[in-house]
Amino acid sequence: MIALVFGLIGPTTGAAQEPYPARTVTLIVPAAAGSTTDTVARLLADQLTQKWGKTVIVENIARGMNVGAEHVARAAPDGYTLLVSPPGPLTINDLLYRDLGYSPRQFAAISLLAKIPNVLVVRKELPAQTIAELVAYGKANPGKLTYGSQGAGSTAHLTAALMEMRAGIKMVHVPYRGAVPALNDVIASHIDLFFDTLTTSVPLYRAGKVRIMAVASPERANALPEVPTIAESAFPDFRSITWFGLVGPPNTPAALVGRINRDIVDALKRADIDAKLRELRLEPMIGTPADASKFFAEETQLWGKVIREANVTVQ
Image (cartoon, rainbow, N blue to C red; front, side):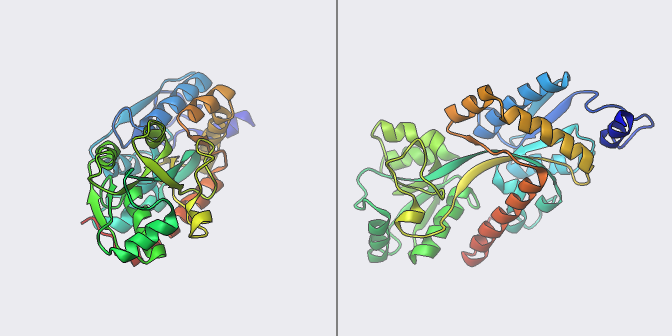
């Protein structure tokens, strides 16, 4: 029976069937070293290296999210090349880019990893203290409110577009090359607002450099119990979170997917890993491959609707 199981989860190429993993496993990160995605991947790599007794390395492909995702999509479905990714490459990028070299829905969903709420960060002098006041200000001053993002199609861009749709207002989009320059311009009052993650915005909020008007997740954030959610303030069911998932190339065998998932869940349940993630204000997401697949589909449906109705394009 053991030999049969190993045969099912072993590589699909080569004459010999061997236990998995028999050699180095590579986690592709489609982002630069030091990013939150990279941090999550390195925590995971360390845990899996200890669990498997084989080296698990992180390779950063930072030439754009789609480059790293396409690399994994074209890899052998043998479990030795996997993708640790934020939402875009796993859900909506084929709705934004005409010539994408892969289909997000063809990846083999292995596991959800962690999530973090997005929050509405505003400049300190903005003449609106609540979501209701912000909406009123936007309606009274059409086209005057400005918001930043990490670029067209980013979570920040789509979240602001969702707010425009729900509020019936129109704001001016100012794209940046990352969250830091956008935040710097909020601090300097060059733009009015930016949907950011807790990780980078809470320290600025605590230092009194910006205001956090509302939390975009369905529930209040433990790090900001005093700050209401957008859903409770004005727009029921409003939801925007940043999350990270693990997938394999298309056609990765289900038995292998299940094996990797179980080991990842074991790692996420460890008290020390839970503590490290929560230091980054990340919350572990523990579930099965089916849970991950369902979640990816729900996110695709949510943001696909925004993309279509707001006519968001990047090419």
